Length: 224
Image 1 (cartoon, rainbow, N blue to C red):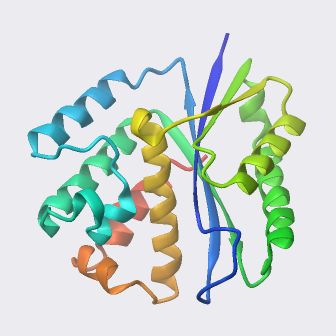
Image 2: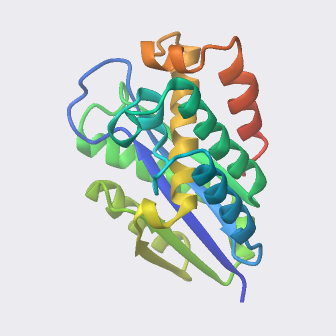
């Protein structure tokens, strides 16, 4: 039986728009269970530990902004950690896609829910042949936003009859952390194109064209 795992992370929320422009993003990471990632996970964890990090969850946004458990690490240490995550994603046999909703077109919860459901459904339909190759689809999401959980359940259940949902903690699944990493990079791509990277983001990616040529270009090769 061929099994597909889908790991999901989001950026944004369903509340009032606090700053403009704003977007809501949902990233999906797809992993064919026939292709083990045990060695890639082991290499990542050994590398992280060897570098002196005592963290279970590589939360990309917090790494960049030097927040919470990453507050005590220098910019060079944090940059090395993000490169480890990039190398992990590149080494894993996974694909990804991201749905983006411009909040100018979805200013309230009802509008955002409707546009998000349609956009996700459209992407699933566009890649139906890919999904049809699996006997079982398991969706992993941390249920961080109830509105998104409802949309995911509805869209996947309508599109596929062989799907199950699991609430998952990012600390326990490296591919949920990969989804968080990719989602953050997709948001940074939007902000970079619109010339509105924050000061901490510009300081973190201080090398010319590093964000575009090293991170974004590399991840583009993994798109579904």
